[in-house]
Amino acid sequence: INCCFFNKVYNRVECDVWMMQENIKLIDLIIELVDARVPLSSRNPDIDELGKNKSRLILLNKSDLADERQNEAWKTYFQAKGFYVVKVDSRNGSGMKAINNEKIERDRRRGIKNRPIRAMVVGIPNVGKSTFINTFAGRACAKTGNKPGVTKGKQWIRLNKGVELLDTPGI
Image (tube, rainbow, N blue to C red; front, side):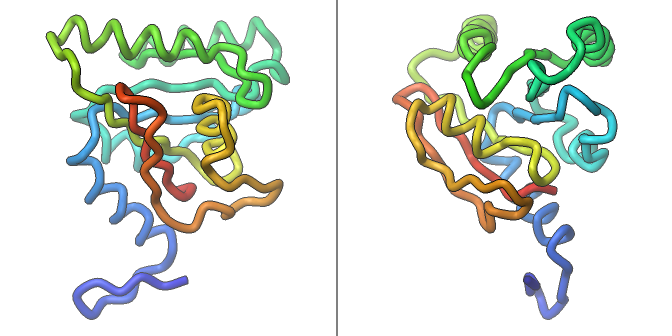
């Protein structure tokens, strides 16, 4: 799939990075999903650069499949870099309550009330972004599959009056 912009042709990854740059202005929070079994290998370093001025939440997804001591070590590692980290399992929903509480607390500290939180869900392909959104929403609102690249474009998903998520293709 090619993306054309000002008569230039970009490959799929460049197009997705460009799309993230355009949408970063619209959001309050970046939710980055990483695979808890291989956290550094399942991160895209471009996300750090693109989201440097936004609040970040790193979700160690599939934490039930990883060693608990390693999960804690990675959580400490990312927290030392200034990120808020939550261990989750998108399939059965464990850890989801901590995400909600963290967002509410952050808004209270910033003095924001009665405004929906707009968050972008990002990560490499097949890390569980759409599964996380479906579990968090409590309904099937994002298409999922057992192969990479099921999500082809961006889509806004309104969870409730307080939270809107932007589902993005893997980058």
